[in-house]
Amino acid sequence: MPKITVLDIYKKKAEGKKITMLTAYDYPTAQIVDQAGIDMILVGDSLGMVVQGVSSTLPVTMDEMIYHTKMVSRATQSSMVVGDMPFLSYQTSASDAVRNAGRFLKEAGAEAVKLEGGSQMAEAIRAIVNAGIPVVAHIGLTPQYVHMMGGFKVQGKNDAAREKILADARAVQDAGAFSVVLEGIPTSLGAEIHKALHIPTIGIGAGPDCDGQVLVIHDVLGLFDRFTPKFVKKYANLKDQALKAVKEYKQEVESGKFPSEEHSFK
Image 1 (cartoon, one colour):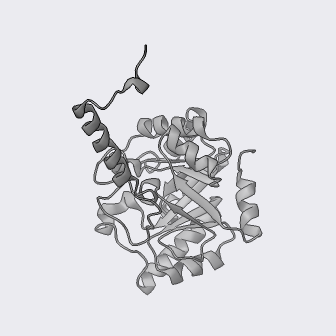
Image 2 (cartoon, rainbow, N blue to C red):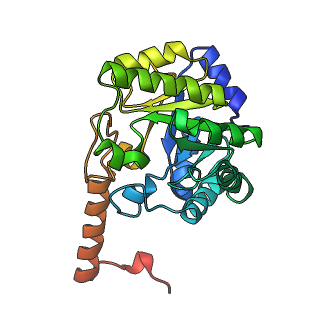
């Protein structure tokens, strides 16, 4: 199956077909997501929380993102791989933004990058796009702005905040982003932005009217239980299954049941 491209994403929107996106951070997980037919794999800086165990995405580095994106790219046959630009990899200058975005394509094999921020990031988005790198924008609840937002809180709840986010949506579209992630906003605002833009909208806690949806794979599979946002649906509980398997292994080793003759050489 050929690689999904920006044109394929546009076509799905034009035909009214929903766009699917999930995160992945390593080779075996990316294989599963790719084989399931997911349109876009986001190598998210959320790996800081669900893989590294830190309390936010802020400590994640460019080198760490490149490392994980390489693994995902090796595993992916059809899904579009999107590298998530970490904190301070694009905010410092347009030239830094282009250079670091380019690393995702040159070194890690990604086909696009994602970055957070609306109007204030329009210059960076425009510079990256002008360098030939597709950009997914990200507005609303933006985790890299967690300290300014006072925590991971729903955004756009009053009229002024709604207008700001709507303006951000138009700004990232005008700057050349080919799609935009809408996170943690009221359903009505997600629907309004969807109607206002011609680029695809990808929701995560933004209601059902978006052109597509994205979730963190560890949430979907029940592997992360430190907290569960309202917008998450767990489709499995693999942590409990894995814990059961490891406990059974421990018991069999301690009792001498494993390894048996079946698992030994003659």
